[in-house]
Image 1: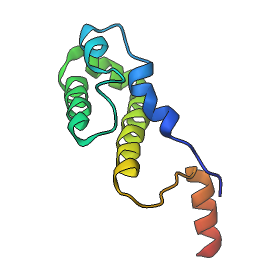
Image 2: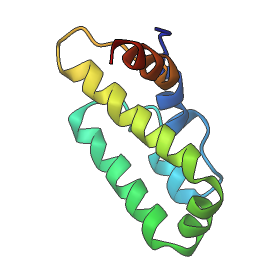
Image 3: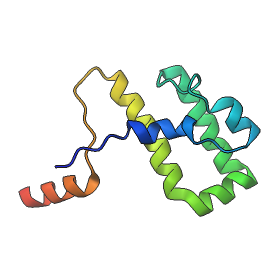
Length: 102
């Protein structure tokens, strides 16, 4: 199976931020430090994406990017907070490996 380091994708939540004022002020490294309190910023961000015209347009045109980034951030948050061994694997390699067993 092929390991995948989604930590880099998760960090895009604050490294590759739009010019939108709300994004610039809230999607920062300080505000997205993978702690439980910071999940509120991800929640507010997803609500903005779903309830604003600009957010709707972005989702329409870049849905996969948002799902991957937000999912990677939440997954990385879980990984850092479960106190267990946890590794990311590429979907295709897991699917192929699972298909061989079944």
